Length: 268
Ligand SMILES: [Zn+2]
Image 1 (spheres, rainbow, N blue to C red):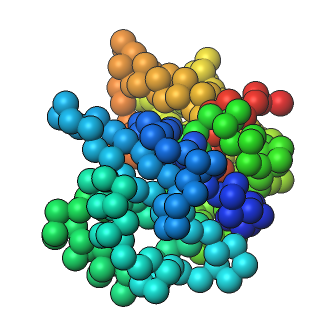
Image 2: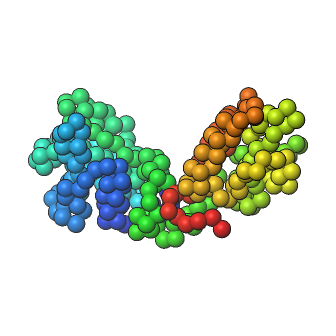
Image 3: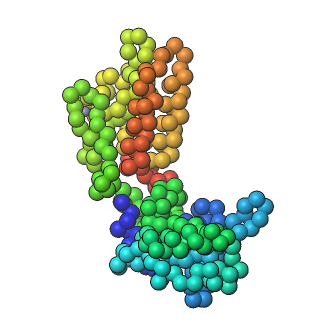
C-alpha cells in the first residue's frame, strides 16, 4: 500500500524517515542524519532499558531503484563500526529485506553480545499506521490518498456481507460507503454482531448503536467502536450470541487492511 510511496523517497529522506520512526518507537536521537558525516554511519540513537542507556548505530539502506535485499557486502565491518562509535548495538533500517547471508551474520553478531534490531520493509509497513499524520506528511504527499486498499496484496481477505444470500465484499472501494456494522437482538434477547451492506443488514440492526464502515476505517473511530462492542457485550438483560466476539474480531481483523492511521483526518 505505501510501498510504492516509500520507493519514491530519496535515500536522504529515508534517513530522516528512519529518525522519525525510531523516535516514534521510543529511541532518542544522539546523532542525526545531517550530522552523520562518517562513512558507514547514518545515525546514532539511544534507549533506556533497566536504568541503562543503550546506544545503537543505525544503518539506513534504501535501494529504491533495485529494490534488492541488502547483502553482506553492503554491510561490512558492522562490529568495527559499532565499536568505533561507542555503541552497544546495531539497527538495520532497510526499505527492503536482508539476504539470508546477512541475516546469519547479524545473528552471529548477536551471539557475540552486539544487540541487533532488524527493521525491514514489512516492519515499516506495520509501523506506519501507528504513526502520527503530521509526521507522515513530511514524507508522503496527501497521505490519505495513499489509502486505497491492500487488495494487491496476496493475503487480502474480503469481508463478506452477513446478509442472507449476499456474497459482497463490503471492504471494496465501491462498497465501503454502503456498508455498516451493528447489533441485532433476536426474540430471545440474544445479541448478535452484524456487518454487511446497508440494504442487507440495516433493518436487522435493531440496537441503537451501529457504525459506518467508512467511519471506523479511522483508527480513532475504531477504538471508540471497540469500546462500544465491549459495552454492548456486558449490557444487562442481553444474552451474548456464542459467535459475538468471533464476528467482532473478524470485522476488526478485516478492517486492519483498510485502516487509516491516526491524525489523517476525519471521516467524510
Ligand atoms: Zn449484502
